[in-house]
Image (tube, rainbow, N blue to C red; front, side):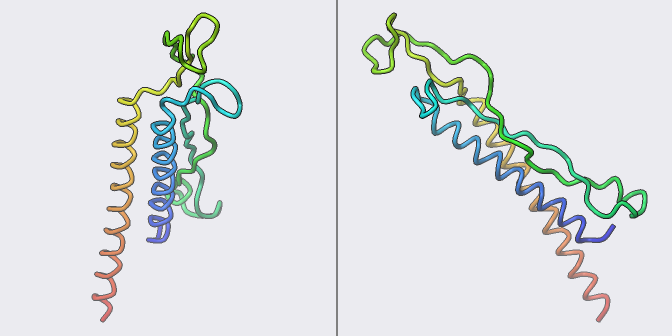
Length: 141
C-alpha cells in the first residue's frame, strides 16, 4: 500500500461526508415545505454509502482489502408525513389538516455534527500523510 491509496480513501470519505452534509442541509431547508413540484410535502432524503475496491485485482492481500466509500444513491425517507390541523393554511385538505415533511430537526442536526466529524477525521488523515511524505523527503536529503 502506498500513500496515494491512503489519500484516495480519505478523499472518498471527504466527498461522501460533503454529500451527506449537502443532503442534510437540504432536509433542514425544506423542513416546512408543504408543496413540491411532484405534489405533496417534501420528503426527507438520506445518502446511501457503499464501498468500492481500490487498486488492481493483482495487488497483494492487504491492498485487495482496501476500500473507498462512495454515495451510491440518495433515497427518500418512506415515513409518513406529519399532519397538523391548520384549517386556514393554503395546503389544508377538506378536514383542515396539512401534511408537513417528516424532517426531525434534532436528527438532522445530529447528522450534520456526525458528518462534520467524519469530514474532519478524513482531513486529519490527509494532513498526517502529507506530514509523513515531508518527513520522508527530509530523510532523503
